[in-house]
Length: 238
Image 1 (cartoon, rainbow, N blue to C red):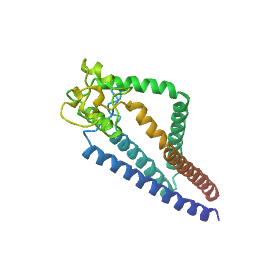
Image 2 (image 1 turned 90 degrees about the vertical axis):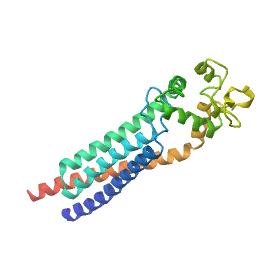
Image 3 (image 1 turned 60 degrees about the vertical axis):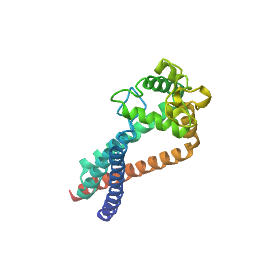
Image 4 (image 1 turned 45 degrees about the vertical axis):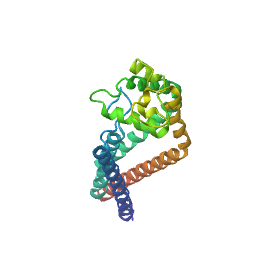
């Protein structure tokens, strides 16, 4: 009876981790595709230049694949050490995510202030050598969200030391349109515009976060259940 229960949990955990591993492969693949096709789109942050969407997906995908692989092998081999390793790794990820979420909501105002300062600092790298990714990122953000600057278009005055903005700030794009009068530029601040867009899509983000948490809890349950079953089976055999 105990052996049959162990086999059932074993195959359930293997199937779960196989899907987990395949999900990691998918995320990694998307990250590599973004890096290959959108390599000229980088982060807007000057403090964390490597914190781009492609790099985040690559790191996340590789880590998820590693966890899924450990879980699969642990389930097939019925190895207590691997099962416990999988449980600890997944638990650490879950606790890290929970901690980040709590800190984010607890220090939202401070994060806002820091993010705006960092973004304004990054504006000074716009159009400079070796910062093509950041330059393209700002151009795309300002064009797609119809905004200009972090707080307002005057942020660019400090960058150029003149009354001008990038051409991506213009209501109607044309060569050197950023040299025209402010009436021809977008007035909306990019930080608040993007923040509002994220808030409008907060439900989707919340659902995704909840689903991720449930999957992780399910994985933890499978791992601990099988670990206990393996221990019981070893004891019974002894």
